[in-house]
Amino acid sequence: MNMKETKEQQRERTDSKIMHATLEIIIAQGIGAVNIESVARRSGVAKTTIYRRYANTDDLIRHLTLTVAPSLDFSALEPSRESLRTVLRRIIDCFDEEFELKAIGVVLSSENAHLHNIAKSVIEPAAERFYDFLRRGMAIGAFRDGLDAPFLFQTVLGSMLAYKALGTSSAAPHADWAGNMTGLVWASIRPAQ
Image (cartoon, rainbow, N blue to C red; front, side, top):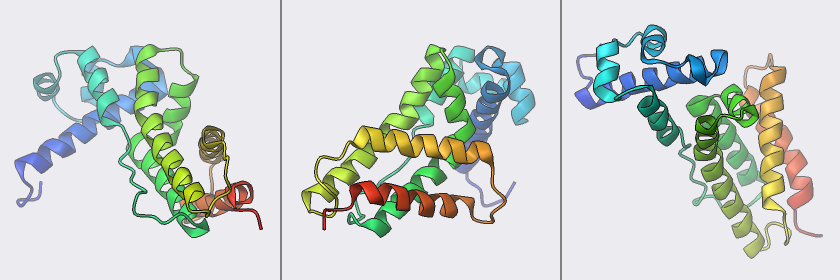
């Protein structure tokens, strides 16, 4: 441990290990396989530490649901083709770093209520910020009026999942995906000439 690391930073790092281990277990084995012992083994965090933070497995999963929401903010971006590319890049980076794209695919295909809550806490805030970006673009004439924002976001999400599932050998996979997706989305949102 870095001597300059504060107790708060250490706590955040430990919480991150616990949350990532929980997600990995859910992805690999399903939500039924999540318990404090399996999370401790996978995360390398002592069971006593986990129990100090979470009363039980349900509490741990509930906390996961509350903490995985992506921290996306597009309000400073002026709507344009280039800023659309930036928005798409931020979405894929955030989803892949915070939640892992394969986890999104797992939760979307599950019938488990806990997983649906996790999906909602991740996807809905990102979708709302994306919709707001599109609305701002329509309001200033940078994007065509009457866009079906939910359909566009679902298309983006589906494309991200497919891109992750297919894998890539590129050194900059997220930038490649964002560039390609910008071209596809731009064709449907650009203002009439």
